[in-house]
Image 1 (cartoon, rainbow, N blue to C red):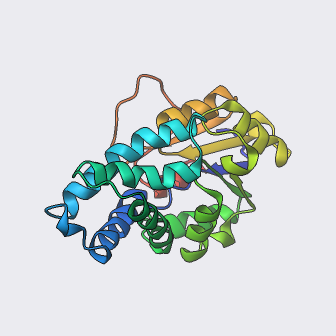
Image 2: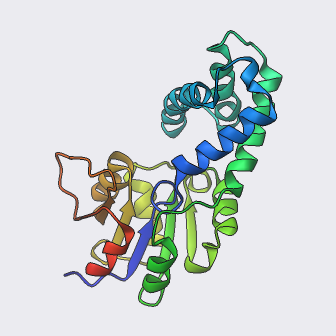
Length: 230
């Protein structure tokens, strides 16, 4: 077993339950803006939003659109699905959604327990593609800040995961050697293959037990399993 000295985590869908928190925030937005005028229920609204958000987020991650456009356009396209063209409403919903989502505090099971355990043994860090201000708000509202030495955001660095340079930047910033660093994340293409391409070992957080063609350094379905090797 390697003697790691630096542990890096992804935030969304690894510690912070993005899907559950997003659903709550979108449902709140649906109700506050009376979107039942256009959608039968929150479900088709949420489904439509996620479809557009996934496409636009990939474009943002690849550097093809700016975050300001992403924030409103994903809702503008969602409204267009029900033949509503209203840029101002989409922008208002987008801003409200961001605020509400950062206030949600659903974490994956054992998040606090495993972070408290690991903090006694290693310096911990975050590497995230999420918007800087929203990621810090999420961490503060969930009382996660106390565990981490530093948060590396793609927005601040100017490089998005899975590009190996963001992982190399993070390792260099903490004076960590490749064989001393470990990345823990849920997105196989972004977190695991990105870290692997930089020479860093990886832990694939895989609660859905997805099958992958390439084997990560480690694989877990629950965060508490990190105790088995860290």
